[in-house]
Figure 1 (cartoon, rainbow, N blue to C red):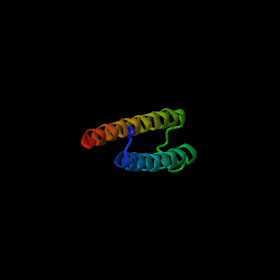
Figure 2 (cartoon, one colour):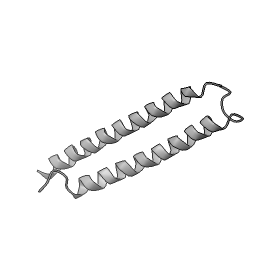
Figure 3 (spheres, rainbow, N blue to C red):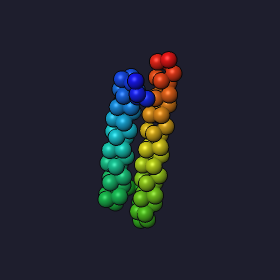
Length: 80
């Protein structure tokens, strides 16, 4: 049997789906603040949002990878 069993595949699929939903949500919020000056926070420096969005994406991808590895390790140990 390989490293990834069916339970691990399901867990990775759920983690990836929820991560992608979070990234889409973050992009919608980012584009709202980046393009809409009327409802934004009044800060004329929109480069601030670029840094925050990039860090949010990086943290989200890192968390998805860590949770996927943890789920593989947990379900692999239960299999033995």
